[in-house]
Image (cartoon, rainbow, N blue to C red; front, top):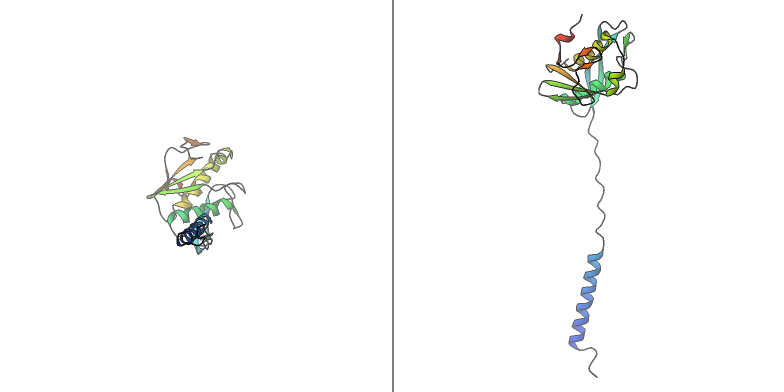
Length: 180
């Protein structure tokens, strides 16, 4: 009988042990990475002028409101202003233009032009022509207060010809919504 612990057997046994250890190491799942630390962006208070209706639904009344934004770019400021607008006025005597709980429109900017995407619920408000004019003009004046040339209205992401009695085929400008 040959020797059990010959040089060949010992080297082979060491190689077999090394292969088994390498195999076990490769089969282990990688260590779980640590979750990234979330860093909330610093919110800043910015004053914006928001327009609402008077009690007779004839004129627009301005309120200066403070909104919190993480970025002071025109898109963030415009969306924050429309969110406050949809929430209603804080001054007695001013009337909310949309019912409480109505979603705020989304606003998009391209150059000096605003595009306001009204939710489809705005088509079902059943306002008269003066109420519809106040609705669109308070939005227009709020957005064009500091910058921009005009506001184009969409409903539910689609071009529409009218919102109730008012023609939406042309963009609204400051002059279209000047005080009566």
